[in-house]
Structures are given as structure tokens and as C-alpha cells.
Length: 186
Image 1 (spheres, rainbow, N blue to C red):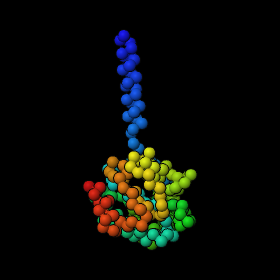
Image 2 (image 1 turned 30 degrees about the vertical axis):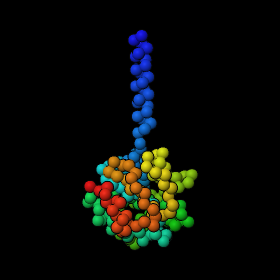
Image 3 (image 1 turned 45 degrees about the horizontal axis):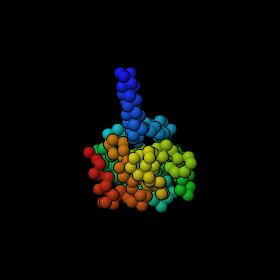
Image 4 (image 1 turned 180 degrees about the vertical axis):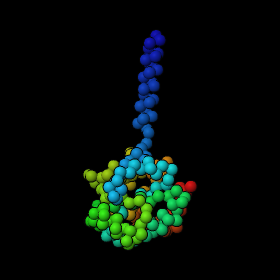
């Protein structure tokens, strides 16, 4: 009788641990990416910060958003905001350059000082794991949000969870968009 009760207790404990493990949600901090210079960066480096992850391109009608993202970063970086730029050539070949060319363009044209990363794929069969997380509710626990175009923004709170998706044409300089982001800052 005691062996049966112990067996039942162990099975219940295993089931509970399995359920907790399956329900544990990934966070943005679970990913490692390459910066624009080819150095590995674990996003856990940004624990406690609010992240605005943006897929960017240098030959797009929305490219002037670089200036607005840079100004927004400068305005709020001391309150815990970090803008992370991820170049992507997934939309009509609007980011054809190498990482070195992209870096030079961003610095020369827009004085970008927020972290920039190596060019990645943000949609389709070869989607980068970070963007798979950002765009699939089953991974992020928030929303299915396929990238619609360059300059789509994903807001990650200080716990590493996706909390907001900001569409490409929505600009951080717009007061309503700014309010949606600022409420997550310290």
C-alpha cells in the first residue's frame, strides 16, 4: 500500500514538473545574436532594460525612421530603453549591403549609436530564431505578429517578454506610439 502511494506521489510530482517546464515561456533573453561586427551577444546582457527590437533597411521609404529611433534612444536610454537594430534584406532587397556597409551608412547618415546587429532573416523558411520568437504566439505568449515590412518594432519589457508590436509605419516620434512605449520604462 505504501509503495503504491509513493509511486502515485512520484508520478504526480513528475507530471507537475513537466507541466511547469512546458508552460515556462521563453524570453528575449534566451537568444544569442551577432552584432554588426560579428561578435556574439547574448541578449541576457540587456536584462532589466526595455528593448525596442526593429528590423531595419537602408534603401526603404521608411529609412528616415533611423533618425527618429536614434533621437528616441537618446531621449530614453537613461530610463532603461535600448533600441536594437536588425538589418534585413527580406523586403524587395532594400538592405543589400554588407554588415560593414550597413554600419557605415547608419553612422554617416543617421549618427546611429544604438546597438546594431548582423543582417538576419525576419520571415520565411530561414527566419532567425529571435524573430521566430517575436512573431509566433506559441513562442512569445503574446501575439502572432509576422513582420509586415521594414521598421516593424517589437517592444520587450524589462523581464524579457514581448508586450507590444508596433507596425512599420507607426513612428516612435508619434505621441501615441511614444506613450505605448514609455509606460514600460523605469
